[in-house]
Amino acid sequence: MKIESIIELVDEKLIKRLTKDLVAFNSQNPPGSTIEITKYLQEESKSLGFDSKIYSMDEHRSNIVITFGKGEKDIVLSGHLDTVPVGDESQWKYPPLQVTEKDGKLFGRGTVDMKGGVASLIAVMDAISRSNIELNYRLVFAGTADEEVGMNGAFHLKEKGVMNKAECLIITEATDLKVGIAEKGPYWIRMKVKGKAAHGSMPEVGINAIEGVCTGIKALKDIIPKTKHDLLGQTTLNVGMISGGAKINVVPEDCYIDCDFRLIPEVDQEEFNSSITDQMKKLSDENDCKYTHEVLHAIPAVETNQDESIVKGLLKWSKRISNRDENPIGLTYGTDAAALIPPDNIPFVIIGGGSPSVLHQSNEYVQLSDLVAASKIITGGILETYSKK
Image 1 (tube, rainbow, N blue to C red):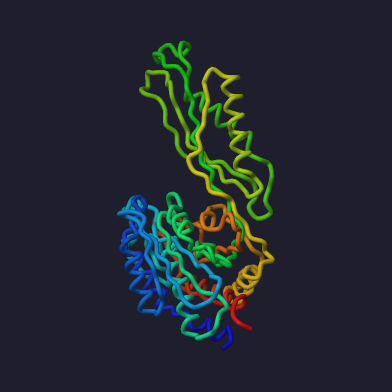
Image 2: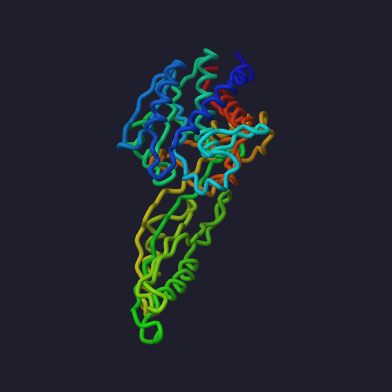
């Protein structure tokens, strides 16, 4: 059976139904409840002829692993089951926790990030299973909890051995059907500044911690590594949160900021943290305020060689099905790949329907045709690379 024929087995109705059903589950994170979703997917996998196992994490969160086929090695397909919060519902044109279909678009929280992507992956397994083609590998779907907060679901499955036999990893985050082979690593720190309180009418008596933070922000920008990655560009910094001060008429004694660095693979995390420590000491020595920092969250940057067979296969079918550029891309955001892959560093690819521009936005949507195209591209790429010749 030719690859072209198998690709046509991708079931658009299945993708649409699964996306609608998954969006209807409230898995906004926090708390990111995925227990009912995993139960639903277990029933769906059974009806499709697949085996499955649920891995419970706590009273709110569970992961699911769905398997099909035989082989000593696994092709792991992964998608997360939680979503970011809906936010202000008045900003939504349509109810966020149900799918509204209009002009070929599916609106709803999670349609693109990434319950639609999960549906695409289940459809890949379904198409290959119905083709009766023999693969040298087992297909494994890993549905994870808590990606939107700490990737704890992916770490949990890694600990349970889900990646032990993995030959490659494919994740369907939104890439506009382009083939992503590199992603930056989130490195979050809190910079804390200690000043001295005083009456607001006598600021010269105190030491203003908020002003100290302003000095600190510039100093943090100064230590951003200048190294550039061919696909990812340079390490970036976003100051996302600030907290400080007691009253308008009191010189603030304490202030802190939470900083979101996105590191490229060339930047070593430990060395980067040492440079922050050195900068805090320098600031403390040169200013009246005292500066310290703590690391809140650290996920490694990861990348795949574009000469890997699965990368070439997906690039070929992306070009053929969606007419996308034959060159791979880098992603500014992190995915579960960073939790699932290291330290083995197996090949991974991020490819999915939908635009990254609508991630975490009100009126989130995805083109149904893009979800179908993603499923076809991944099916083609897997068969191109791993089917028995």
